[in-house]
Length: 372
Image 1 (tube, rainbow, N blue to C red):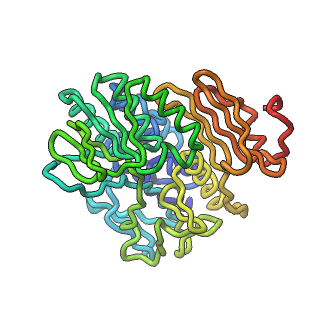
Image 2: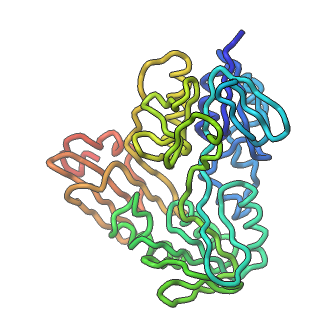
Image 3: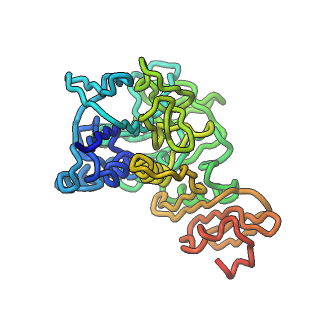
């Protein structure tokens, strides 16, 4: 009889683990959404009119061919002593190994005032609802200038004719990926596309037509969408011996405090760090499968990197923004390399495609820009 592996969560991490474990194991993948697993980082495409199916990772037959049993439903509780997962419909799934890949949830915080309805964008159902509301709206404000918030704002501006504003508390947008000067260029380029960016500002309240900032300004806002980060839903560990912090605490082998139970992706907290990038989710999915199959190599996160489109604009970030900046500017582009003690520590590109060689050069001696 094959060992039974139950994976809770059908995002990139969970699907990758299931793909690698089948058909050597009896794999069950629990999906709590009414759609096949999809690429969440592309979710704003549904807001601008794309079909949910265009985001699916694989067709249903792919899972059948792989021998992955897909179960739809919400997890009610985990019994870590009886080694079983119980679903809200009464079903129970026994396991030999359990992988928690439940991802994260959007932060939505209360605002003063009379407004009753706010939105967040985390699921396809969220995207469909926002698309419906925007069809009869004149203005929208995104609270949060991170990747998803900016992509959503640019998508709304280019497809719906709705005026769009982004409110960011940090001094500039994408502070985790960009330096201040590169962010300023991106803000200017987004303004040309119809997106108004307001930085160093904090939302205070709202009524049915406006968002009010702490500094007294108001922004016309028929629709307000939160894109202000995410948090791990730790309720999955309630009633178990699984230790949690900001996420589900794991060691370098992605093991929780309960033998045979692992956590990966956004749900995992490793050395006090949470992970919110698709690249790390995929890595963890591969790593946990290898470990369950008997591997002995610890998981070592790759240096963070992002290569994406924001409103059709090329934006890329590699490594750390640490050291002396070496800048090359174009009319609508900026390239910044960060060099410390002769070592290329990081690189940021806005408005131009990053050369494929850059990622491999991070952490190595810098020999001049011609080598990139």
